Image 1 (cartoon, rainbow, N blue to C red):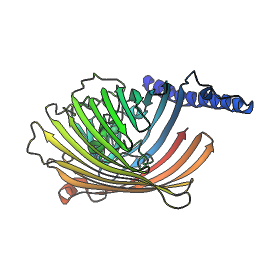
Image 2 (image 1 turned 45 degrees about the vertical axis):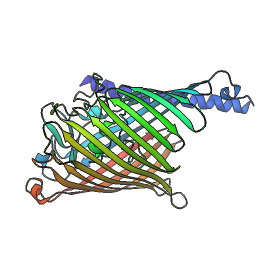
Image 3 (image 1 turned 60 degrees about the vertical axis):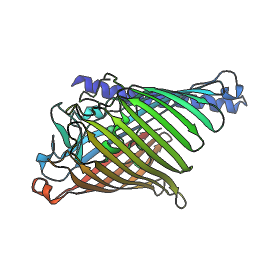
Image 4 (image 1 turned 45 degrees about the horizontal axis):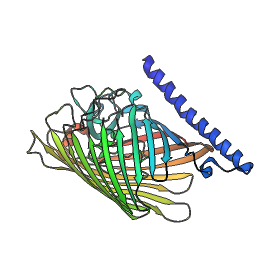
Length: 403
Ligand SMILES: [Cu+2]
């Protein structure tokens, strides 16, 4: 369709424009320095906008296991995933700051049923049936938000945030942003437990930070984005979340959150969810150049409404990205979820992933990564009749990062 081509071209243009603008800015700053002039920030009275942008585009070829009938559009698929982020921030006096953020993704070009991913569930492609064994595409607009921060003193800050859409302030940071998860070519199967509220169509949040402690309260739209991935949907602001984050050390963060989510699924409008999550994320320097990024997380979904008899559904995640050197990354992830959408009765399933990425610096602002991930899926015997025994998947990918 022509509008898809148009969007693809626009996204590519957007990636290159801010990068070029930033280069110009850096060049000007360098010239200032060379001539011994003070930079604008040191001059004082006129605060400047600080602009930052980055983009990731990944071309993925995924070959999922099991019989073809399990998937909405076949078990094998090539697709492009990724995101472009633009951030602008500016100080207003010594105590106030405004941060604006825009995030776009090319996911919608995959088509409404997203990409095949064994044991993944959540949202819908046609407005009639649940997506099963597939990851839904994300909306073109993933984040469009503004945040105002007020500094009371060196230790204490408060902020308010408006987003449409934006993150609803529940769970660990979403997989495509957190350091342990961003390098994986496919989504975690715990996504709809831990971090699926990252695209909420309408968010009003407030937060308070003191030293290592941060408390956030968010009122947001509980309904997940619909299958039209190019629009911005009505804001209902009918759901609430609370999140407490504590930095145990500068490199280890603990998180606990709770959310009351009104009618998340359009196919079951009278079902509400109560969600809780706990996570620990760390950034551990091992030896020389190597760093281990790790997230441990647990989340529980409790269904309210017409399905009071359903047991709470739990999910566990251990996610690791090991930066062996600037050239090599090693990926390892294990998840176990109690899923009610794969079969008539809820059941425990698990996925383990192991992979590696070789990184090449193409120039100072572009990095190429070539990677491969092998996925191993475990299902109970009751599912084997339908799913078969061969439940391993291969995912090859080429990633471009623009800084
Ligand atoms: Cu998502």
